[in-house]
Amino acid sequence: MELSEVTISKAIIDDFSKTFLDYTEIDAGIVGAGPSGLVCAAYLARSGAKVAVFERKLSVGGGMWGGGMMYPRIVVQKEALRILDDFNIRYREYVPGYYLANSIEAVGKLAAAAVDSGAEIFNLMSVEDVMIRQDDTITGLVINWTAVEMAGLHVDPLSISSKVVIDATGHDADVCRIVQRKVSAERLNEGRGVVGEKSMWADVGEKVLLSTTKEVYPGLIVAGMAANAVSGGHRMGPIFGGMLLSGELAAKKAKEYLKL
Ligand code: 48H
Ligand code: FE2
Image (cartoon, rainbow, N blue to C red; front, side):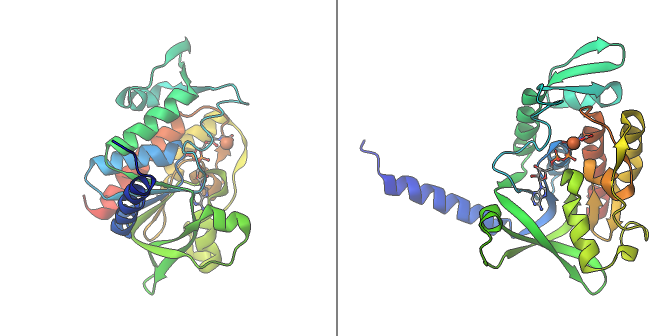
């Protein structure tokens, strides 16, 4: 059989265009495909939600690939081992209470779990705005190609309707900052707005994630490092149990919001 370049092109354009069209209306829009966003996507999609993850970069995985200072290893604490088990990520005990995993294996398996569960990942797309209706509820995301943003081109974005939005954008807490600009700090995060993250303190930073992971504005749930950035939680360095648990908790809160 002689291969046709045009058939290859048609296959790609046809399938992606149909998928993109289908995902203009979704249950949950997750912004950021770092560890918290991927875990959230996997658990939400498992419960039957129509889930899309929008990732600015070419690669998924956010800050997990690089482990600690480019040593591709992550540390995970006992409380989060069940999530590693769930996604078949291998680990070993280093000293009591500290478990080591390969950061490259972890990203690969988290991404596979999200996709296997039915979540659709859109890479190379940046969320640049949100839709908010009169009743102060987020109703969707405004997206554009990252390449447009990088080239500084004046190209208008497209919009996706989403019943719930999860900000999993890491240190920048991008979506929360957008909402703060578009409404006001007093209407976000129980009147506190985006506080900004505090200095390194792994123990406190990890533990507080379970309370900073929450709905900060109607229809907007914040997860992972963004959760601590919004509520003034400490950073924690390359220990990732909190990111995994926060992604799981964000999925639970989104499920409640969606009444699933
Ligand atoms: C589309 C966007 C946008 C946008 C950003 O940084 P991440 O890995 O986020 P988490 O919270 O899942 O994990 C944090 C972890 O990696 C980390 O940095 C830790 C534990 N740090 C501790 C410390 O002390 O430093 O991933 C966020 C993803 C990235 O891939 C971004 O490209 C993406 O979100 N993103 N995608 N539209 N507007 N903004
Ligand atoms: Fe970080």
